[in-house]
Length: 313
Image 1 (tube, one colour):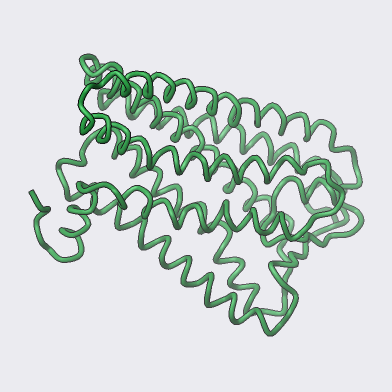
Image 2: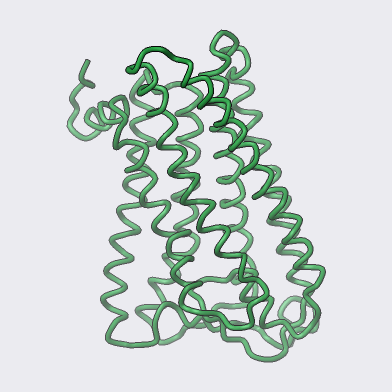
């Protein structure tokens, strides 16, 4: 019986997960359950802080709020299923569920990628073009940029998923990973993946390389502008608003590059799982901490959310 009308013999895949050692699974369950709770709680707290604090009603925090939503979505695509597998002897995932997981993962990660680029552009306008910042980053433009990020990412995720659904899976169905992703599924296909790999290459150029170039160009202008500021305090304040974003960009692109640079590798390894954890768990969990650690405005808003106290003046 076909899995999706493409004459595939495989109707489900088996996810090996992080470990096959029974004694470790309860420990890992607790660790990743706590990580999931911390990530959702941290990102929801950032959202609440942005909503309650008028000083955070700016373009930068509008995009940060969207980023927090994406982080909650991204970890929710992978971790709850992994937690279920820790508690069950059944490690299989239906073919269609595997494709759905892949679609939503690429959708959310793609929007994340574009939003990080938009946030770099926002910092460029705020620091290098302050006189025209309000006009060039109006509420309508903010909505348009966020919407375009969603449309571009949706188009890519749908293209990758539809292209994958045309492949035949007639042999082994064991995925040495804890979620469904393109490199691992390509290795299991018994038909040619040349077109799929070309599509993934184009997507990497459009959604990975091009945004990274734009981010680099934006911050090159930002650094040049900040270095022209005579006041040491002014330079420190300008760099502090960009440091958090650059840290998040480094983690996001670092893990993304390593995830897909092994596309031609025949054997999956535990390194792939480690990178997957960084990409889908650690990065979304760290983002709220990174953005609030050196930001007194966010810290004050969080104080108001949790303790009902007004932000410190």
